[in-house]
Length: 177
Image (cartoon, rainbow, N blue to C red; front, top):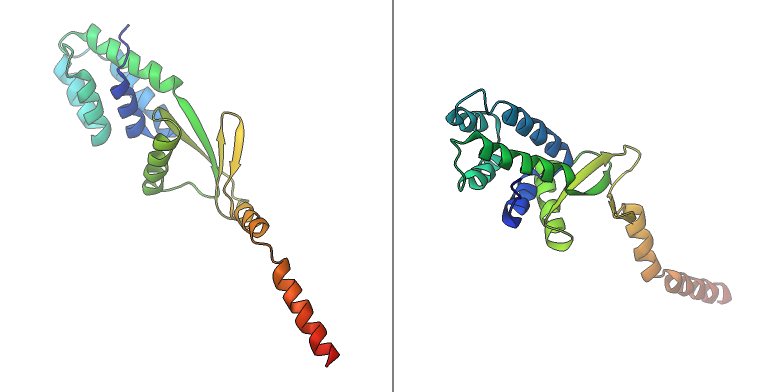
């Protein structure tokens, strides 16, 4: 079986970005793979153009450019390698108060690819009880970026005791007058 090159793997991840979308892509690729022998190869490429978003389509065109697409067995190997890879790529989970928009997902994916792993997909779970922020779960570790935790950390670093002490001194001097 054909294995995907590193640049193709990172291109797939950066194009797909989320585990939810990856499941749709896998279904699409399985359907296309099943139809390889039922249609001519030009039909497969036309089908790709009809059903894939432009960014994903360009990624697959790049992956298929070095193979003989008139040979359904070669095309099938590439599609199956992509399916296997996408199905098993590492996921980084987030718990958020509402499902994020695509602009936020793109920025967050860019940060995760740069700081954690290029070959990763983001998985979002919504928790409407959260008021703000997010919780990141990676390799069994929880990282809370909720407003409550960020404020707690801030006030631990910037103690308000000195302000209360100043008020107490001011009150005692006013009482003594």
